[in-house]
Image 1 (cartoon, rainbow, N blue to C red):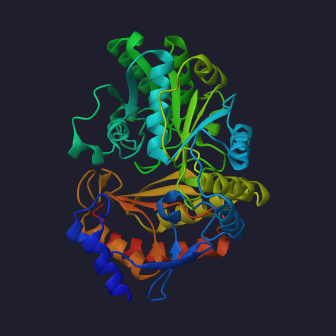
Image 2 (tube, helix red, strand yellow):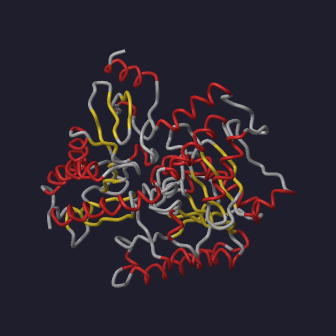
Image 3 (cartoon, rainbow, N blue to C red):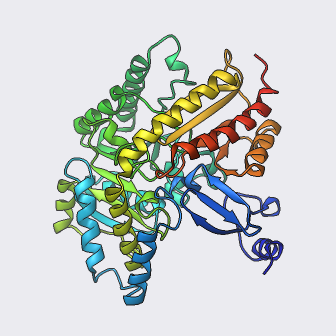
Length: 444
């Protein structure tokens, strides 16, 4: 089929997520290699967001492609009460890189399932119902996971599950609690408010606190150690579990194996993850639990399961992907290339007043765009359709061969961990052009 026919038949016979269907105008993609993808017309795009911040090792890595091909030729699927060599190997590999004594994994289909099962495990383990989560967070698209996420995409299907409790966000750039205070002082107040919420909800009913290890699609906002250390203390004090969602921030994205590794005292009881575990080559999620949580289920039924749990092809893909992280030093590479990316973004902030804030670490950065740095008025509203300036900027990026996430008043800078300095410079030059357009709307 020609590209226009592919696009038309896709629109006629398939749904696209999070969109009014008539407004969908898809790129027809044909292939990918390294940090680039090509559409069906042969145009090349620099993948500045690793698609949905998941293609960490880049596209079509030969080691992972070979592993999938070899496994497919031997055994594509076996029901989850059986096991395979790849499953055993992957479980051990995750235990080796997980923080603390997290050492046992339930495999599922993706990040949403991982979060759903993480909440199930916490509720079963504690015998309590309530899960505390943040407004500016995203934990998945199914009913309970969407309820857990504060992301506005949840709103259309509310009321969701009744046992989610909201906590305030440690968003130093916008939360008024931080006005006139250091970030550490603001974080301490936020943590005190969270403890008060636990009291008000009844500690005997609170099963867990669920937070992202390093904030992702809600804006890459990140608190200090004061915040995470206090969350750990609150959980210990009231017999709650700390669940850390590493769907986006895991597997080297932040220059560490896990985003929570930036806070070594805040070891979680449960990690939920996906995305970088296979770099999107085959769908896979994982819920990794500590030794004491695992031991509970030695004598208690784990009321959770999926037809495709520990899917054979996904196991093989994940083993090969973790081998790539290790063999190519991609965790360290993310840290080093992240310094190059941040320098470039800070240089752009010096040039373009429309950049109000640059946030992130390693290859996990966002720029937040404002009409006025003094008032911090966003150039496009939270939970609103994109403004005309942001539409123009997004179109410019795509027209000039760069694909990335453009959301509200933010542009995400999360390229594959294999990116080079020259490729970072290529992306920054295209971004520079888009920011020049946005500067036209600056009012400060």
